[in-house]
Image 1 (cartoon, helix red, strand yellow):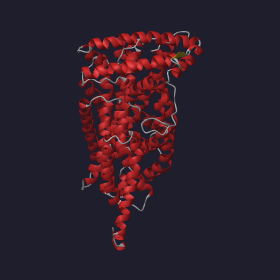
Image 2 (cartoon, one colour; image 1 turned 45 degrees about the horizontal axis):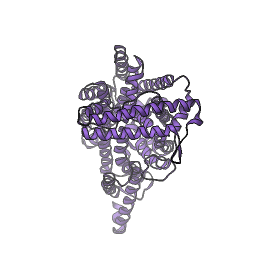
Image 3 (cartoon, helix red, strand yellow; image 1 turned 90 degrees about the vertical axis):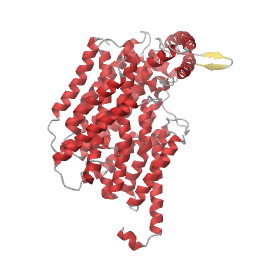
Image 4 (cartoon, helix red, strand yellow; image 1 turned 60 degrees about the vertical axis):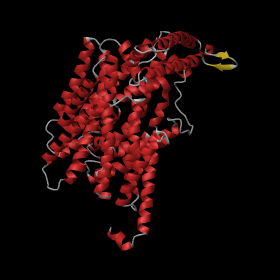
Length: 570
């Protein structure tokens, strides 16, 4: 990185933090600190909701997903608009009428304190893990690519977020997220424009799309009902709807974003805005990754995008084997480049026939490229078990550092860190509020002043921030970070959503049945995931249906074995 990149990166992040602290000084009561004084307009609500979900993982992992697997991942978000409509019609009116500070307050009014506390604790477990991952994701990648100290990066990102989140609460998070989303959109559009500019003169955007299609990267829709296929139309519409319902409807990190709306209309418009814009945004980010794939049809790539993995295998006994694969890849890329040029000039020439099999040259060389990279990853695993061989999360950052001009590298790094800060701030804000309101305040018997609970929320936010840094410092890289965050959520979200749906719609079921059913369900879901019963996206539907079914059965059995007078007095 050059001096200008450091200036752009530092100036962007410092401005966001100082602006957030300046604009949100003096939150003296719980209403202001946790619900932002209910002053947010719909665009602030919408951007804050989007920024909470759009972590650094979104931009690093999703572009890598586009590069390797194409556009199919967008199906994951197909259930989002459906979920937004349901939340606007059912969840928001109830939250607004009860004037709750957290989503879990409602559960006590419908059931009892133990059910409220259980739901809050499940949220705290999964969201605290996710907060650590959102810090760790950009830190591990930046440390690997730039040589920065990983632990120091985790600590710096965490401390920066803690400063303005503790200082200004919900309003600070919402205010800074507008600036962060502006930086993110500007940076991604510039990156997309430059990728197209870097393509050969004779290759137009239409040609680039055609080349991506020939490389099997533009397959958007998969209507198969196969559990072995993680992303399909059905998993997105069904499993995705349940995941999004639980995330946006019951996860305090999101609920707190729209509870800050000025009124019910602003809350609803903010969520609808998110529902309409989120799929195009994810489509665009995946398309950036696909265009990086097209760019690398004409330019050389490393065998593995993770420089630490390459270094590890070079320093092992497998170095010569790895270098042999690199030479094969270089030769394949030469053929790949020729095929891409020929396709741009005349797509009908992109046809070969071998042993009676007809196919696309671009697809053929893309397949060979994939096979060579898989062989390289196997050698990396043999060379070092501690180094991550899967390099999806490194593709985009490699492109940024090796191809963007001075100054813009700093801007794109600011995009990655801004995204990390925005989602982490929302998570810490929600963790602090939930701990203070649902656990601490509810169990402190004597009445306290508002300022006491504001300070308590700040203290808990600080503690959760420190814990998130510890999780980040002890985490290990997963197959794909965006999948890891969604897996963590899916293990808990279905259960929590089922509790809320029972509260909203099944008045027959009471607290004891729900509490027992939730405990049983969480154990079964954990066994189901670690036993590899089904893809994680379906766990949301499974957990939701399971907790509702078990609760209804328990309640029915209890009522049939209990005298009616006892039930009436229960």
